Length: 382
Ligand SMILES: *Cc1c(COP(=O)(O)O)cnc(C)c1O
View 1 (cartoon, protein in one colour):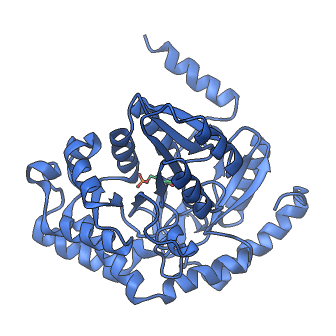
View 2 (cartoon, rainbow, N blue to C red):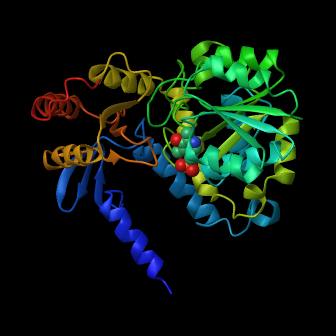
């Protein structure tokens, strides 16, 4: 019956795409223990170290004591608390929007909002390197998916020119591209959207808490706040816990509360997790030095980086995994990224910098990179 499983797994092994979990035994700031070995974690999205922040932990534990661990039901049944609503007000204000809706994950936020806004008669226009959750959401929506090459505004305009026949046009872009770390040209995208009457949605998963002077995201960076029609993001990266959100007009949010299936048919986030996200947002507002520390660290590794994500593109699969192993053996956890997460022959190490990294961590990283560039003849990459 299940021979196909064995076959497929053997096939994945034969082409080097078999995946295995790495098991973390202990966490202490930027250090983790895997297989008894102490490593510096250079592939976490906990950009501000907030998952470990004492205030975040404290607030979460406090609310667990008051509300329990699980929410017990979906938001529309009996899973909705004052903490959920406080978080929605807070994130809406943070992103300078009228309202917000919180989902259990960012993945579900994308599924919910995209499948609600476009249907068969519509088109969704996306950058080729957008996150997998956006692609899955587009498929679910049944709207015609039109993909433009990464950052290619000419092709985006061509597509828009040819899209008059569709009832609605929705452009979606990552703000910070999750595997490349570069920024979307948002002002130009918004200009094109206005010209061709399209809606714009941004996915701020890696921008929230990182990009813009106060971490509000790509609009703040470009000084065009309030311009995108839909702002999606997640509490799971720089905000240190879990959960997704969509910010926009009150009408959009009310519509999503009524229609988004990934909101309606799933158990609410625990109130305590909402409290963690609230505490994280307060910390970002009250301790701006945290974002400054992150950027100091990023600049020490690569002064021209646009975000906390710094890809080291190797290309070939086996070489990438071999170099990843070398990092591991030398005390640095930096996992290799393979297809289908990245295009074939663009295998890479996806280096992420956080505010929790110490000067010693960064120095160890830099010297190891210098050594491996020599050993593996990587002169041509980055
Ligand atoms: C991580 C990520 C998501 C999904 O968010 P989760 O909260 O982890 O489910 C969505 N979009 C992008 C660009 C991401 O990097």
